[in-house]
Image 1 (cartoon, rainbow, N blue to C red):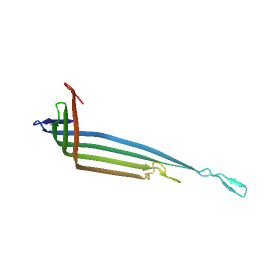
Image 2 (tube, rainbow, N blue to C red):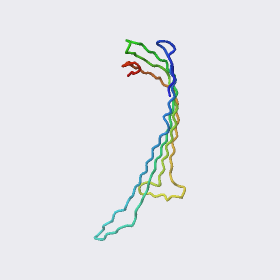
Image 3 (cartoon, helix red, strand yellow):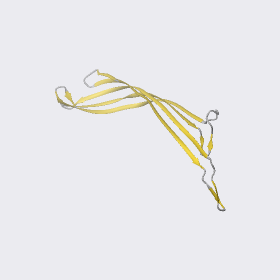
Image 4 (cartoon, one colour):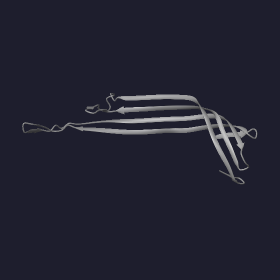
Length: 146
């Protein structure tokens, strides 16, 4: 959302708000290890051991910003206008990642034991950055411009 106005022929201001929304990512992996048969002196021993382990990953992020900018415009001809913008943007970002596993290759942790390893990472940040831009506006026909 942008709101602004020119207070003179060449100078103006603009206030902007941007909500980049919430984004999410999910991934799941499964590892299955089958113990191979062992051959010794002509005898084959086939163990009945299959080990499975899995991991899941979830990540969420939310970002928004406010900005205030000064505007400048300069009509070069009756059809061509050049412009510039300079200001500041205040932004805020929140993120969270969760990694869970039911074991590691060769080690199975049964579910429901309360021993499922989980790693949670949360981070927040905010800051102020410079906003700038340049423009060229060409009046093609009456109220039509590019």
